[in-house]
Image 1 (cartoon, rainbow, N blue to C red):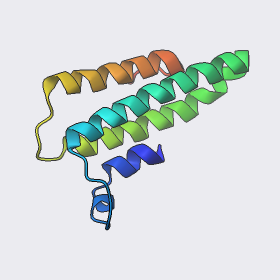
Image 2: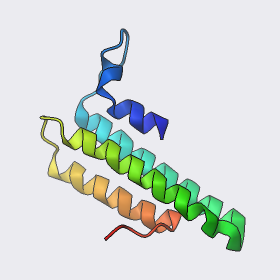
Image 3: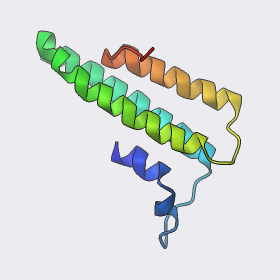
Image 4: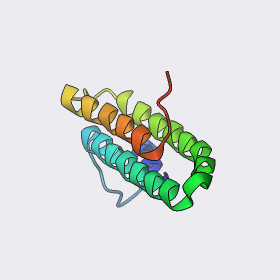
Length: 105
């Protein structure tokens, strides 16, 4: 979560020596973080068995924070390619499936 937030925090780029990335690269990286967390969610649920449902709230909150990171990037003036936008949406759909967190309607 902190990595995604750091990637989307514009203030971090103003610090000396900070790595500068284009918004499209950042958006792709956040989508990859979303997928990684989805796989973590699946493994946690499987390892916990019936108790795995207790993680749903945590993964729902993680999804909300990741969606906020994506929104910050989408609000930047640089255009986002349609294919990347579709990839990000597919990553969130896969996250929902893997982590067992239904997508918000």
